Image (cartoon, helix red, strand yellow):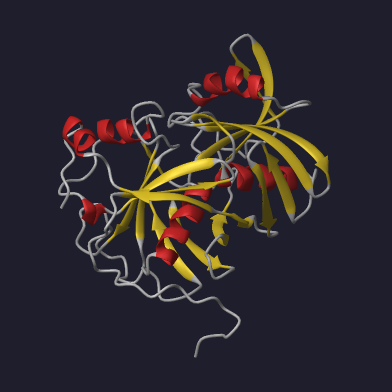
Length: 314
């Protein structure tokens, strides 16, 4: 029997072909376009993702969320239970990401609003691991996600060099040395301790670290300042996306690093230019993220745009 305190999702037919080409949302200014794979005849290409994300000639977004991938879809794991929605995450440069905190909150709201889940909590599968979602209000605009366990192990980040926890190391970035901490929460992160994180700092040093040879799969980069025992402020350079107003996985990684270094204790409020997220860090560094999601629009591409980029509706 359903807990009467739990919100219920809208009633819909999740098997129906959507009457829209896309839905767009943002989480603290980090915006994503959700595309149901049944809307188009062929899978999206990297070129098509770049066209959709272009802020002048496309819709404009920080990435594309392709899902839910239904049983039988070539990008969905064959052994995944039928009731677990699967997601693939594409960066605006056309590359694929393993996990995105804001993207997952956005996708969770999309699933909730369009009747793809029966209730809360529910799970979502990503290439960076499976997460557990709780919808905290009827609109689906407040979401909590169990993001998994943060590790600082160099082999799992991955980062070159001897096996170790990557904490308070010195890294040469361009012509300066920075103090870094590396972490993985389904995707790689490099957290730089900074006296004064600024957009200019993130845009100057971020790309140097993202493609540093120490990170063979590249890395997301954050610049962190501790505000007090339960609050930090960060600026973000995102792998494949560039300077970003907010990031869920970045917030999780930074909160975990601050706790691991003894600079903070859970819960940690992570302040970013786009807003704040609350991160709860367990003693074993399992983390839960809670924050808002805002709807922008659902719509259809112009036929001219579809034709120009080789997109064909199902």
